[in-house]
Image 1 (tube, rainbow over the protein chains, first blue to last red):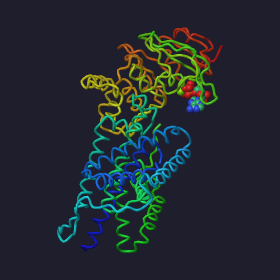
Image 2: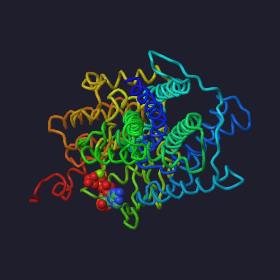
Image 3: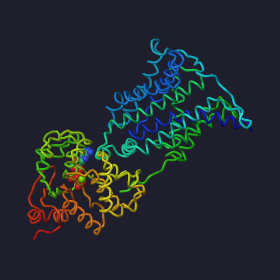
Image 4: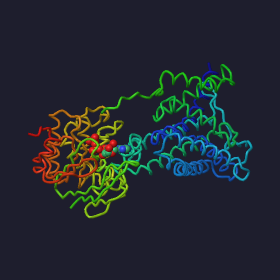
Length: 294
Length: 238
Ligand SMILES: Nc1ncnc2c1ncn2[C@@H]1O[C@H](COP(=O)(O)OP(=O)(O)OP(=O)(O)O)[C@@H](O)[C@H]1O
Ligand SMILES: [Mg+2]
């Protein structure tokens, strides 16, 4: 039983990190109806910048994290400006191809020797790992940090979206760009802000991921990116609580499958569940099949 | 002159939807654009509010050129466009929709004042303030759209088919409200399928046919025109 609960805790940690990435997919989808396939690579860049920050440049961890977040926010804004905005009102397939292009570019550009380099890097622990025994359960300080940080970010995001003018603008842009414009909303700026927030979250996820699973490389964003995308779809793409719910489920499925079935089947089962859910609920767990009012 | 439109030509791809139209609106007026489906009424309004860019022609608002100005800046100039089909935000509450109407304004107490005015004008909205706008009935949604349009305290209110899909009783009510908004000092540019009602409230009218203005004048004159009577007012020519 303790073993099971510990696995659940591990799954929670993984799920929370997926949630940070999944939020970016779902927020961006909300405002531009586009799957930003480069999002997983922004996560990778975040992981590298965090690593360089605290392990190479000797920055204090919070500063390293903030640097990664701000830089990736900027990267996200540039990606949107260069690769997506010119295609915004073109057929969706054009933006999709552009997104795949950006993704490959980030992966191979990062692999260059003078950028991050093609090799795996081992991430030294920015602080010693501590195990606590709580009610017979072994809990690590990393788990606690991930839990607290992600929870804090989720609360901040919730406040931003439901309590600020910017958040209200984001919610109107998600409905209809022109209707939002008629209210005086600068749609371009709002979309940029959405990309910035989503990318900063991915960067934070990247740094936490590198601390928890201390090995990084330029292609490390692909799998977590796909899983987080799956999580977003599972919860209902475009729906923020859905992304978190989907990510938590993904984290549990993955961890419990590895622990009790087979770690080789982990990904296969995770994606099989996605397919099943979509067969029975194409709009995702929290998605509504809305009938538009005329 | 509050609004002046000169030789406006607008294309959708290679389709010329407006073939060079000119008209004006004076301060304090209700001016109506009437015409059949596809005549170009909504296109005209969307071009004025900046959602569409004309290929040729100019638009002046209070003497200032606003042609090619982005839509979100045109709102700040004092033009509020209540679009066809209402376009309320179904995922926002009624209150949030109204506050979105005041998005360009900063002074909280003034916004609060406008909010009170709008809620007094549309008491139904007050009862439903916390409800998601998507759950409102068609008539309530139209009131919300108009209320939201008023929240920016516009100099010129543009209404695109406010009576669409409403019961006769509600249509009467909406037109009464338009009249009273106008009497309290807001200039109105009104597009309507319901030409009969529009000509009742408007001071002047323009008749649009396939992207051209084919007739204009005081509402009474337009209403008396035999062709208009048969084409838009449902009367058979004697
Ligand atoms: N997005 C669009 N793409 C291509 N053509 C369009 C588009 N919107 C309108 N049109 C065309 O432009 C012409 C004018 O349309 P518009 O919507 O301005 O007409 P309207 O007078 O408002 O009609 P209605 O009374 O039906 O609302 C029509 O022929 C229409 O088919
Ligand atoms: Mg129309």
